[in-house]
Length: 111
Image (cartoon, rainbow, N blue to C red; front, side):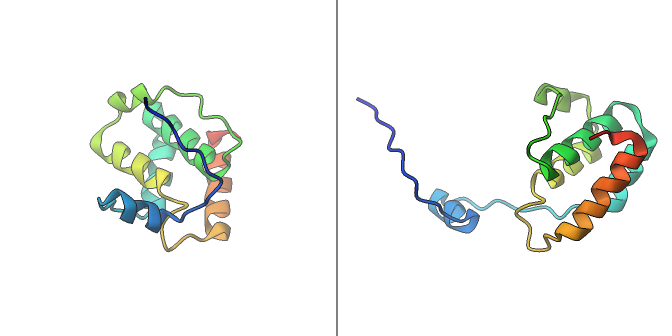
């Protein structure tokens, strides 16, 4: 019989990764490249803009299928992974990420 043990214990990302026994390389966000891709528009620009806003503001729904990642080129996929890591990287700077979010909104990324 399989059972799942639910606890209210909180562990850090570093503790979780150590427990898993496999390293995860956290990618720093290339914000200038992200802005350029959003300015260029198209599917990847909208996808990345929505992904950033949803990652920065967790209550914002990400109204895309993750299957859409198949439509992205390698650079856009890398940017998507960087977006997923923004809250875990050591250079986390809420003021800078807020400013970036505001630029994305001004470019039509919505909110």
